[in-house]
Length: 401
Image (cartoon, rainbow, N blue to C red; front, side, top):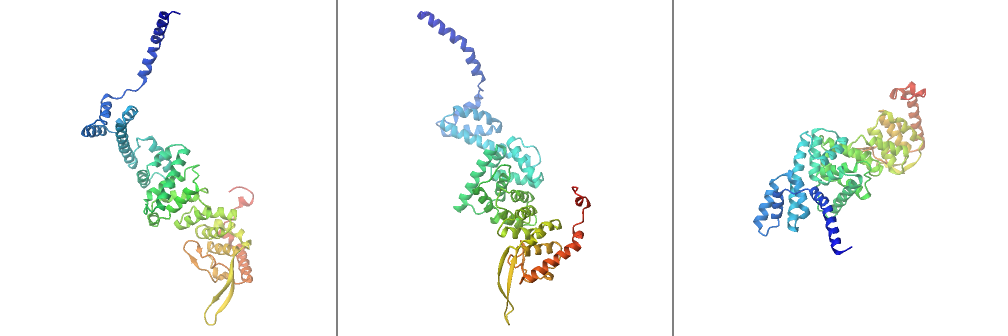
């Protein structure tokens, strides 16, 4: 092919491809000329010109955000910095409007915010005080909206990063009074399905609910119902923390959800003080529907404490005292059935604000007293249990109730 023919071929190919290039160029969104000019003004050499351009762009309001983001693609370094600051300011203003609408019961014109609100409302309801708390949570912890409106990996990442930051600030003594809305935000994120908090995150939340500001708010007679429900969700989640810690939280804040935790501990016969705490919590918070679970423990002879004690001063009388798991179960049964434990031989009981009785004070001086007390309960149970727990004929016949 001659040189002339090659030039003609190349020109033909160029002409054939030109329409496609034009079409592709037409598909690129064009930036509003006014906004493009103002964006260029952000990098002007004159300071007053830069300030004037920034003020005008801010005055355009949130509606200009898409155009401003397109301007970022070709902006110089100085202009890019100012554009990002303007966009952030406008997005905050837009979010504030959406939050105000949400707080007043109107739909929020923000899909991400609506998604986060739905996750919150499913747990705590749609009461006005719940909306007010959610607004405070978003303002105190802006990451929450992105975490709840994204996928589970994004939630875990942002939640764990925030918990790590809280732990670090606590170690450095940079935060001493954390807003209750911040603690509520952490509880909400942790309660989402498949969040699976790490040991670091669990330690963070455990420390947060022990902080003075949170305790003061939750000890008030009119404590926030929404925060109480978030804490109840944390207590109910087996993956949130060890069973005993969850039971302690339930006892501390008088949460009915602790009953399920106590029943889990009893059913699994968890070792150590967990079983004792669970039995006493069930006695204080449960009902006569739980008598059967407690009666099964009357045969548990695990020794909890033993030793010699003194009584009186002149003359000093010493006696041997032992406490067993069956003793704790018996004391719980007596409390649930409104019987006086002293009539059963419990002479050393001391009351406890959280767990009904103090551990180590539930027991007997000798085995005869213990056997006598348990035998007396069994007689009382045989004579009165049907009155306490009405007999269900269908259940006895093998039918479900």
